[in-house]
Length: 145
Image (cartoon, rainbow, N blue to C red):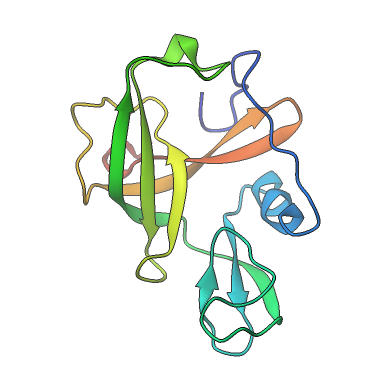
C-alpha cells in the first residue's frame, strides 16, 4: 500500500486547511515538509500559527530527510477506523524525526510486521495515494527497497 500505490477504498482522506496545505502539497510531491521557524529555526509539527519555542509568527515549511526512529507505538488488533479493517493487526507509531529531538509525527507503519517494531527502530518516510491525495506514512528502514 505504500510507494505511491492506491490505498484500499474507504480509507480516510485528509482535508487540508490554510495552515496544513503546505504539508499536503509537499506530500503530493513526495516530500515530507515540516514547518520551521524563520527566527529560531525550531521545527514545529503539527503545524502551528506561532512558533512553540519563541512565539514568532514567521513559520515556513521545508523538506526534511524523512528519516527518524520509532519513539513509541501501539499495535491495533481491534480496528474501529473505517478503511483499515483489512490491515489488522497494524502499527500506529510516534516517529521522532532525525532533524530535531521531540519532533514527532503520528503515522502508520503499513506492511510492518508488528513483531519486528521496537522503540528506536529506524524508519523512513513513504507515501500512500488516497483518492487524489498523497499521505506520508513510514516504513521500517530495514525494509528499504
